[in-house]
Image 1 (tube, rainbow, N blue to C red):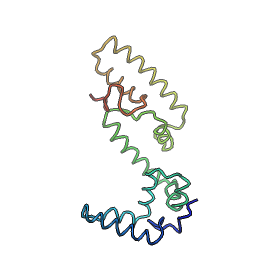
Image 2 (image 1 turned 30 degrees about the vertical axis):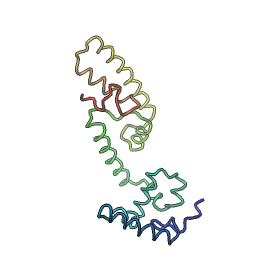
Image 3 (image 1 turned 180 degrees about the vertical axis):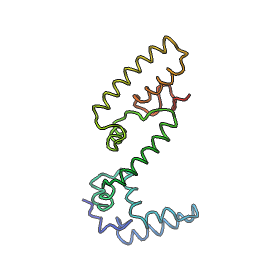
Length: 181
């Protein structure tokens, strides 16, 4: 599939002369422009970082498997430690982007899958579906309550919270990012 790949060694996807020239020129430009050599070392000294760069650039699973078989195997290996680390990262992500904004983690399919896989949202998609149906019904009740009693602040905050849980966009229907406004 990738005939240009030899035994992969960091930036070893070019022929050896191109690879050496790339590293030399990259380090030279980096030193001239930012008085640093951090990025060039990033590529030349860490196969794991190079692998992550390919992942973030959207290379397919098959391409990653061909180029980085050991790194991909390690990344996909599930251990108690990797699960614990993933839970910690997920909790930090949700704290920064949702809890600190006084909003729930939305019921987006990718987020639901992550939470189900980590065991932080229960155990079944059926339970998630029921929860979303109950939230949608409660949202309708809150909307009617707010029409009748528009000054109920607790109802406004709860309505915003449920809209955020059920909304399919990060920017809320009211145009804000946070329910605290």
